[in-house]
Every structure is written in structure tokens, then in C-alpha cells.
Amino acid sequence: MARLYDSWNFLDKMNYNPDGSMKPHKRQRLLDDGLSPSEIDQVENRRMLQVKKYDEREQQWLEKYGVPYSEWEAQGQQSLAELERRQNIAIRNGEEISSLPLDIDPDDYYDQVGNAGLL
Image (cartoon, rainbow, N blue to C red; front, side):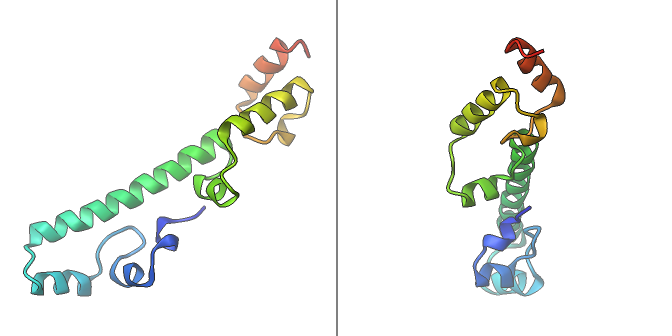
């Protein structure tokens, strides 16, 4: 699964750790520039929150659609509606759960198969 850190530019990677925490030299530079420790903490907390939200979105997409958001985005952002449409057609056609375009809970799969009159 991709990390937000992988999309950062060179300077961001020099100044921040993958979890969004600030590296000591960046913190010192901001102190030298006149920022207070609480202001620096706010900057760091915003970055760490960005990383946390990115990781949560990746995990949610992986659990719901079987593909991390970053991977879906990299593949040309095929619409979720299109993926769900393909999923429903595949279920109606009696395709095996392992061949579906999206991950699905087995109970949901068998409920949909039963509703399609295939069981």
C-alpha cells in the first residue's frame, strides 16, 4: 500500500519523517526563524493528521473495494459506479466470488446471488 510520504517532494522528505513528524533540523530552523514551540507543534500536528487521514482512506478503500485509493487513482480513476455496475453484472452472471472486480463479504455475495435467483 502506498504512503503519503511517497508522494512528497524532496524537501518534504528531507524535513519530515514518513509518519509526518518533523525532523530535528527542521524544528530548529523554524525556532531560529522565530516561530514558537507551540506554532511548530501545530505545523507538525497538521502534517501528522494529513498522514493519518491518508492512511485511513487507503485502508477504508482496501476493505470496501479491495484496492487502495492510491492504486485506484493511479489506474485512471475508473468510477466506483462503473466498478459496482461490473460487480453486479458479474454476480448476476454467476461468476465466482474470487473473480469479482471488487472485494465483497461472502454473506453479501450469497445474498445477492440468492436475490438474482441463482441459488
